[in-house]
Length: 189
Image (cartoon, rainbow, N blue to C red; front, side, top):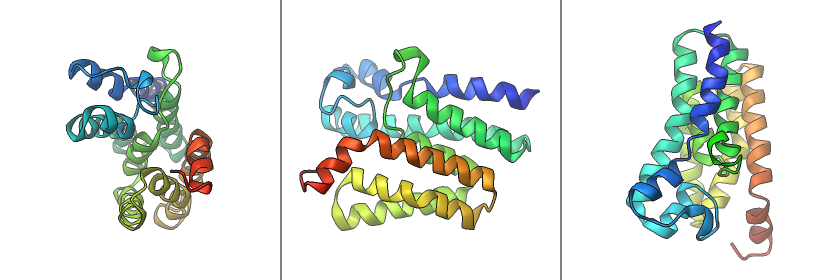
């Protein structure tokens, strides 16, 4: 029973917009009306600098990590683990507290993946860092790392439900990055 209660709790935790809260506390403009309009760490970096972006990134990762880590610690089934992770991720994309208009989900999905497996999470972080070092484009780094995450999950975790959750998050991330993908293909990103 507790496992099933973690699903709505994870969604509500995911619905907390770290970007909006950090910007309010630090006296910065609302990220939804500045820069890219996305309430995420990259946009907060543009409008508030590294400190604000770092706090946002950490908060967004934690809201994906904590419920999955708790579910993992409780020894819940892979089905519940996957559903808790997806609930936290979807809470970030469609937050109940902010008119269901959220961020793109990169940091929160990373937190979820870290909750599934530290090795999986670090494989994705390593991929992001490598692509960023080579190309210096955050969105490209996120897209490559996310696209590889289901493959990593298959080899590292090996559970079909966890792989499926990683795949679902990847599909949502690709859709949310449609504009970035178009700009990358046009050489404008």
